Image 1: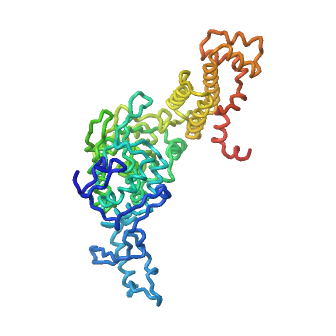
Image 2: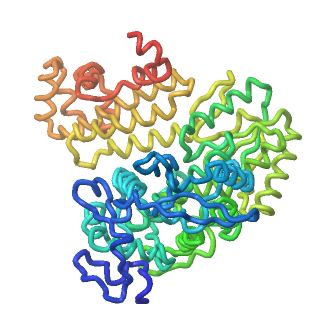
Image 3: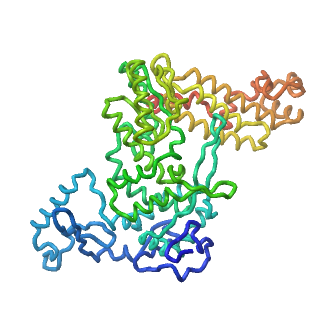
Length: 544
């Protein structure tokens, strides 16, 4: 391993108790971070952060001359008023008027809404103890599995306490090389698989630290029509645009699907977009290396990533929004009503001809300027009522409703939870079912589908009765439980000796009487009707 870099698998540092390599640059005074049990979990400390009062003058050159700015050694500007001596004067501000004028010239020279951080400062902001601590807490909260190095969330603090100073120094010097991403495949409802990438815990923390610094720079310039992976935005805001457009008379829409978006993002275009706001070469180099880190397949082979953004890393959502921001700006310039959530977007127009023209122009723009691939089989111009966006559709009354595909996915998942051969305790199944149903209804709480909620609620209870009947299995066990639940002794024998299948018996009159709705609710089976009413009419729920 090159003595001046830390390789993807972290070289000799893969084991937590591996001795430090003598060839690695070690400058503990500048980069040491202690990952204590209190703070990482907890705070990250460094000698650098302990010298907050040791301020230096950083000279920045612009086209208008040299301008002095007071900063600390982490690149964070301190207020000048804090540099007063015992006599109350400020030795750094002998000419306050001149300094103020120069700062004004500097800001006007930037000419940007949000000034890009200067060279050699952003990487220090990323490596600031407070930023790293926040990044670690976020990564720890999200949990996740190990990357290719096998290191878990629990193992990371011990590893970081020993090796972080050298890692931080390598990042500063531009010598750090991220590990390859572990490729996993997630099944999709249509039978295909979605590729995801799992970075190592170390790389997840570094990516999160980068994202926390970059996000404020780009966030303010993002379109209000972009709702994915952004603070203060949600999928509900995105789908609400469909209902609003219907009321405005936009009854046609364009559905445009980008084929394998995360795997086809052009690296050069993305880096050029980053360079407009990021001036730190170390930061840009680090991001480029994350893009080029490659993936390790389940069979152990490694594949290069000459294009694409690995889906699954903390930095990927921000990079995806940056890559698609030109699309938002183009649609805004044309005055279109649209909504975008990550790589899913829909455009609402007033006529069928307009929808066809917009679809053709979107294909040209995405494949030409953005160099992305449009899935023509899934992209179309159609009446708005026939379109779906993020699991929602517009019903005949112009209201939001869940799609038939969403309903099918719900029933499929409930079947998986209540499958007869799982062998789990009934209460475990009910608890899992409760969590899923509440989460699903919370997402579709804007759906005007009360009658469908009632039908699904009846179906769910029947699935639970089926599971109970399967668990009891033996006729004598079934008889004992039915009698305990108040069933008529003269009719119990017929139910317990029946040769009908489990699904048919779940609808049996005797079984339904014993395992009635009130009893099921007492066991924790969720009442979808009550949950939906509380979510759809929160004012009434609060009043009750």
